[in-house]
Length: 265
Image 1 (cartoon, one colour):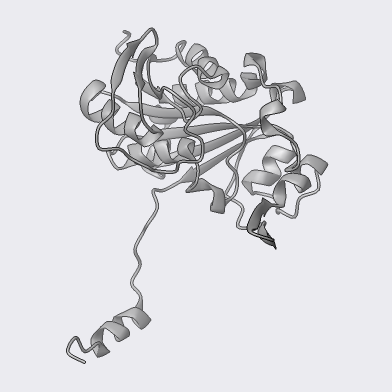
Image 2 (tube, helix red, strand yellow):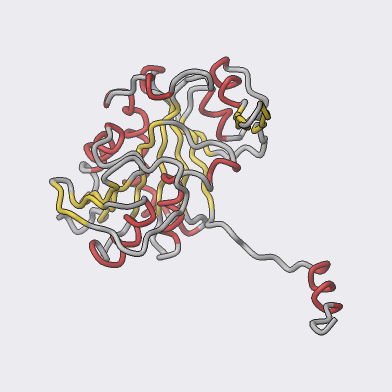
C-alpha cells in the first residue's frame, strides 16, 4: 500500500454482490487501499438497525457480514479494519434525497455510524428515473450505469481528506444521475425539506405513498435551486455536506418546563 493512499472501508446496503458496490470498488482502488465489509444480502431501508452478534466470512474483496450496514461499520472499524481512514457506503441502487429519507437509508446510516468513530464518510447513491407505480426491481442498472457515481466518489475520496472538507462536516451524502444521462458536474447542495409522503386507507390496509417519485420522473419537482433533488433532476451530482444527527441547542422553553416539574405531584 502507498503510504499516501487512504485505507478505505467500503460497505453498502444492497449486498456484497451488487453492481453498485463493484463499480465503486473498481474506481476507488485507483486512489486508495479498499477493503469491502458488506452485508451478505440486501439490507435496503433498514436505517441504523444493529445486531448483537454477526457471522463474518472472508471474501475476495474483504469480508461479508450476515448483518446490516451499521453492523458492517461497527465490526469493520472496531475489529476488522481499525486503521481505516475513510468509510464509503454505496453505491446504492436508487437515490437517497431529501431530509426525510436520510434516516431510513441503510446506505446513509452506514456513513452516519462511521462519524461516531470520528472517521469521515461518504454515502453514495444513484438516481434511477422510475415512477412510484413501476416495479423498481424491473429497472435495469448495470455496472456502466454507475459510471458518474463512481467517478465523482473517486474524485472526492482522492481529494476531500487533504482539502480539509471533513473539518467542517462529518459526512457527505452523494447522489448521482445514471451515467446514460451523460457527464455530470458536481453541485454542493442541502437536503430538500419538502415532504411528499401521504397515506390512503382502503379496507384493511393503508397504502403509504411518496409522491416525489412521479414529480422526479416527469422532471417537474417543487424543490428549489440548491437542494439535492433539484440538482439530480437537473443532471448533476449532488454532494451534501452533513453532520451526524441529534444535535442539541439551548432551549429556554424546555428549561422553564423542567424548573416547574414537580416529581411528587
